[in-house]
Amino acid sequence: MKRFASMLLAGLAMAGAAAAAPQASVESVQYPAWLERGGAAVPLAPGTELRPDDRLRTGASARARVRLADGSTVKLGEKAVFAFERGRSDGLLRNTLRVLAGAFRYTSFGGTRGTSPAIRVRNVTIGIRGTDLWGKSTDERDLVCLIDGAIGVSSPGNPEVRLDKPLDFYQLPRGGEPAVDKVSEAQLAEWALETEMQADGAVGKAGGAWRVVAARTAQRNDALALGRSLRAAGFPARLVEEGPGSFATVVAGLESEAAAKALAANLRASGGVAEPVVER
Image (cartoon, rainbow, N blue to C red; front, side, top):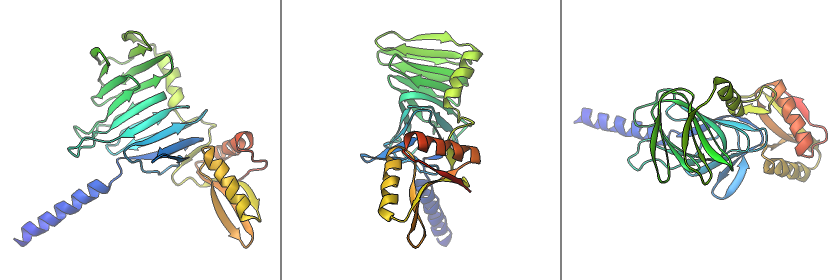
């Protein structure tokens, strides 16, 4: 009886840990980007744990990388809108990833059977079978290109098409009929750049050691006002009290000096910051 009770408690503890584990989290961000949750928008920051019904939005020249609970990753390009929707009611991590705009890349690393998400690109639905794919939704069309593995692709009123050869792609023009074609490796390489972090980009990640001080002031309210302005623009600024009567508005967590310098340039260009300072 005691052994049964111990096993039961261990099982409950494991179930509780699984329930508490995040189903997705943000690994890195090339700013500016936003998290929309519960009707409010805040800057997207590395380390953020995503919840069902969260929506991510990237700005011009921005990127984001999300890791799912099964180890797979989603990379988002600039001006992308991505929704993380609720999973199945049977408790499996069968979430739906909805790409409403922009480019994305989904790569599976062989997660637990039955846990792969369904992906929707505007009007196209993708069934995942352990794979690597790239896609994009624009005002002109929805596009999905297979890189490796196999996928089933469908759209409203049209039967599912299986793509199982690398470089096959499916496209659905707005108001048109779906078509399957082959893309060149050169074209895929060009597309793939749209979802990769840029070498000269303002990239932040969890544990990044560099930061940018947007401004220092003796007035707390001035520092708070600047922080609100930068956060609205998609930069995760925070107030740091450096001493009596000394307040700094800071964006921290940049992955390198180059990334911090890129962010400083962004703040000068779009954030109205005259003299940002790069620090480590």
